Amino acid sequence: MITTINPYNSKEIQQYQELTKKEIKAKLKTAQETFEDWRETSFEHRAKHMRHVGELLRKNKESYAKLITQEMGKPISQSRGELEKCAGLCDHYADKASEYLAREHIETEYFKSYVSYEPIGVVLAVMPWNFPFWQVFRFIVPALMAGNVGVLKHASNVMGCAELIESIFLEAGFPLGGLQNLIIGTEEVEAIINNKAVKAVTLTGSKPAGAAVAAIAGKQIKKAVLELGGNNALVVFNDADIEDAVQKCVVARFHNTGQSCIAGKRLLLQESIAEKFLEKFTEEVKALVSGDPQDDDTFIGVMAREDLAVELEHLMNASIDKGAKLHCGGLRDKTYFAPTILTGVTADMAVFKKETFGPLIAVTTFKTENEAINLVNNSKFGLGASLFSADLEKMEELAVQIKDGAVFINHKVVSHPALPFGGTGISGYGRELSHHGIREFVNIKSVVIA
Image: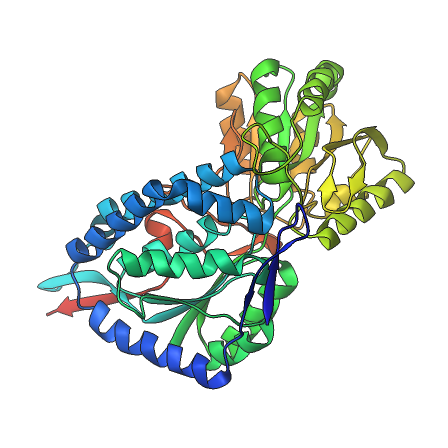
């Protein structure tokens, strides 16, 4: 049995019976059979149903948001925002999929030549709990619009969300095998990837999980897309708009109680403005409202599980032992972790090197632009970075020197339907969203007529 627990009050929400191996195989067979029909549908047909999904998300936003908040502790206002973002993604691909996958005619010496983008089949998604709707939608919306179908292995603590997502697509008119939630544990993933019906896998999660899935897929010569987290830098230069940068950096770090792969986890401040910035930043962090995630005013809820809060506490204490200063916060009570600022952080400390998945930010200072870029790149991760400065031309020059998959200037890193999303290094490979994402799981076929 899989049991979901409310991380705010530790109350049991629901129990789910895990599928047997026979039931899993039956669902994969259904997926393959559905694909054979779905691949022949028009973009117009797919778009009609996808827009209906968006309508359902908006219509039932309150009840859906309540479930997200109950299962993983996200503040209710942010749960609503997640659903709105999913609805926008449905609209985007309903409008753009036919353009993104249109035949690309190439001038050659032949009579006619073009590139065709064609669906490949069943795609397995192994998804995390921190954005229980958005992570799934980021995969399934472009997959279905490309003519593929999906099977979902969601995180066990958000199984109610997983079941609900499947029902939403069915209600919107998608076929039974278009998206199927698999109520399974991680031990079943290898056999599913090995199943001949599954043609590719996408995973968002930890480095060990990504490495394991990629190894299995690699043995089968199957495509994999991996999004494995990050420890993004927020870099504030001395000519930045301090008020604006403070506001954006607070949200960049503490949105979703800091449980985001693209959260700004390392705050790099130029020495001449560090004291002024930190004073204003601290005021804003201390003003963040913690409380019941179901309350509209709550900005900091609880972490999704107590073991995750314990792990964050360990990283904090290990860094303090090496000389970091506890500037504010640092308190933990079960799944609640107070918004925390550590100063005096150096590159050899745990909170600088690792992904701190929770409401803790590590502050480091620098003197020169070169030092700043070296600090940004001093990481095994490579998901994204934010640069704050009035000199936009200089920031564009510096952006080229950053190895990450995204650089945002005077803004926090976000995932946007029109922009490719993904990282370098141990942040993974492959891209989601935009025309790049929808083309990850298609056969890019050259057709030549002589």
